[in-house]
Length: 334
Ligand SMILES: NC(=O)c1ccc[n+]([C@@H]2O[C@H](COP(=O)([O-])OP(=O)(O)OC[C@H]3O[C@@H](n4cnc5c(N)ncnc54)[C@H](OP(=O)(O)O)[C@@H]3O)[C@@H](O)[C@H]2O)c1
Image (cartoon, rainbow, N blue to C red; front, top):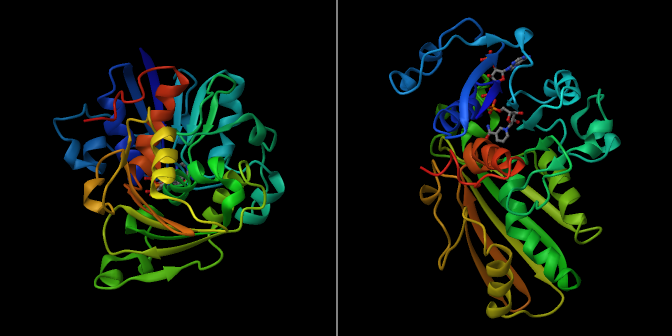
């Protein structure tokens, strides 16, 4: 049995971390740490947990203790790296849901996040925890949980860049996210009233997740020609991700089905669908649902995930399970 620290447990992703840790059979206890919410009771922050989860006081992050075995970090970018190096020195296992350790290069981190990294040496020590793709968790105690858009986009494309890299010309993903993707912070442009009955693209050509996706695609196909275009959708959670892969030759449906079925043969959270998936099929689950269509010299992958679960907390717990060599479903599938 292990003890867990949930840092940033009062945010949108934190709420799911609390729920998953509470129902995880191998977690004996957990503490929740935050900033402005410190000193409040769990039931004040999340009344829906009343009588379902033991009430506790939210701890101040300045009192972060070293007694836990695993630490989930769900903080805004630039905050986690203030704490993680000290914990790594104490041999603790860390899963960071934020972006602080996702990129491999310090220069790319600085230019993308406009911040000086304070522990760039850990960028190479971490593993990028795309749970269906990452195989070896034995060499590190630091897992960088992928971003939400990258999770959907990479699960849709890695099987192809891995198996038919020479046939691919360009890859474009057009993605739609629910409003919770930006976290709990107050921002008028994210208000439901501002987004209801409407859809808009944002950060066109400049979204930071594009850099992260290209980094991972390049590991299979150097200099991948890739673009991500993101949109806001007036729903609470969910990411709908449509990826078009243009080829320099034709492929058959059988060839493409074989590639995806082989890649995800042992993946309990991947469901390959006969029709384009619908957001409501994956909300509140850790599933990635996808339909793959081969059309002569292009492939279209329509896919969806819950950004707060498969795109964040569910995958984070899946990564913890893999770090410990446990069944990847523990605590999440329910
Ligand atoms: N939302 C998503 O769909 C999603 C998906 C994948 C990854 N992520 C990443 O996961 C992380 C958390 O996202 P979120 O959506 O859960 O954010 P959020 O709803 O804004 O929650 C942020 C949490 O961090 C705490 N916090 C903020 N500033 C802090 C500080 N200076 N020191 C200590 N604690 C601080 C907040 O505590 P208080 O209550 O005290 O303010 C809160 O618990 C971010 O890095 C985000 O990019 C989010």
